[in-house]
Amino acid sequence: MVVWYYDPITGTFVVGVFVTGYFLNKSNYQFPFYDTCPKTFEIKDLEHDMKKHFFGQHIASKIIVSALAGNLHRSSNNKKPLVMSFHGCVGSGKNFVSDLIASHMFKEEKIKKLRYHVIHGRSKFPSHSKINSYKEKLYIDMKSAIKSCDTNLFVFDEIHYIPVGILDVLIPILENNDVSIDSRNSIFIFLTNTGSDAIIKKYLDLWVNGFSREMMKVQDFDTILLKSAFNEEGGLKKSTIIDSHIIDHYVPFLPLEKVHVEQCVDAELKNLKKQLDSKTKSEILQIITFGPEPQKLFSSSGCKRIKALVTTELNTI
Image 1 (cartoon, rainbow, N blue to C red):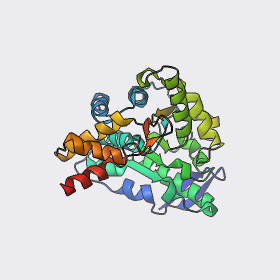
Image 2 (cartoon, one colour):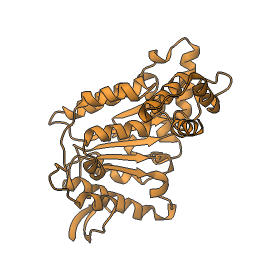
Image 3 (cartoon, rainbow, N blue to C red):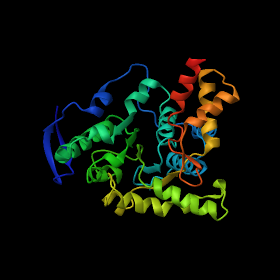
Image 4 (cartoon, helix red, strand yellow):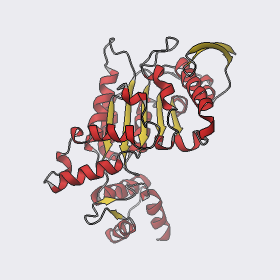
């Protein structure tokens, strides 16, 4: 199909042929008898599920629920889509809660496959020599998805592996300045380990000064995350996305402590409808490495290994 589209790389309108791409494939496929473009979802149901399954992240939970609720009830004067950046250690729940949001935005699995787009930084952009072609394809694919349905969830995973400069091509979409589409009903989330060291350092500073985990607030982490995202290696380094204040929320995912890993073990057992005695659970926890020295407060892998460890243990009984 021949179309006119805006090329954010050259700043001109060009005529071209749509190449079947990642989003185009999904967006053009229609399912009969389904509303393939839902406009809203029940935020209270998401909040309930987060309380049941999302452990140790009181700051992230509050920001995410409030941001999504505000986005659902935004005024007509709100000119841009919701953009969030999730920062934290491996296994702290960034991917988990992103998928949970998608499951509530798109109740039907078939619709979720259409409208939930996960772009993996490591595998999607493997060659630094192809940055311009990556930019062009990314922009065209995202624009195509939004044209097909203005409600999408775009999650950019492992953006610390995305070559510097690629994400800035999205600015016309993130600011809703591309007049050929309306991106306000879509949501954009960046996931990254960037800033995790700064989060741990700030956490320990607060902890040493008598602050419990529950006393910590987003204000304690917001500025250090913005600085980390801008200065550390990764897709947002020195980016105009940050300079232009396009990201609405920098969401800190705190490192998980032993109690939270125990909750993850119990949740996985409940999900599998299985049980383990306290001795076996303790043995699972002994496999997990905790750090940093000398406090050893935090799981180095968060809850990322729990599914595999629980499954292995169940199969050895």
